[in-house]
Amino acid sequence: MMTQKTKNIILIGCFILLVWIAYQFAFSNTISVKQQYNSLKKEAAMFDNMPSQLSSLKQKEKYYDSLLVKFKLKGNSIQNIILKTINTYADSTNIKVNNFIEPHQIKQNDLTINTYQFTLEGNYNAIITLIHKLEQQTKFGEVINLDFKKKKNFKTGKYYLQAHVLLRSFG
Image: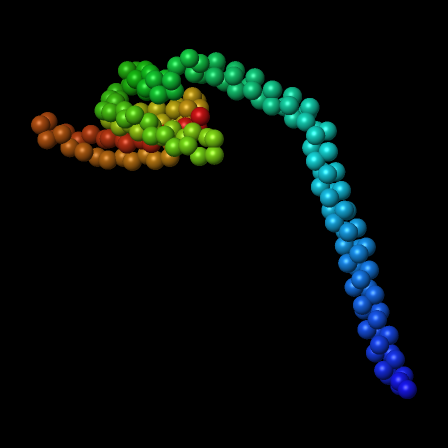
């Protein structure tokens, strides 16, 4: 004969076994179906929101097209327009463009990053004003490096200021 303690242990063991079997055949299936239902519900909400997203993207496209027209970027390369802007400003001030190197291109995740490098020579305030104009007013990109160097012209014995500029543009 079994004692009461043994009967209780067998009863607890059977109960645990019964809970485990119920979980394996009923609860786990219900939980996985509920997770699938929640993910499908999120996808349906995304698809319901598509028309508003599409209209928002069309408005952004119109806005960016208007920016291209405003800054006269349509039909020309950005490099030519940057150089034209620099030269126009340099003609009106006492700045000299020493060199303008071909842009360095990097492609990352369907995005092209162009880095333009050029060297300016002239007055500090005029160079800073040009950099501000390039970065803030024309929206060509951002200046990622600006390196000023004081150099001496040994023929004339005079000092001058040179600025090496790196301008990054996304396109």
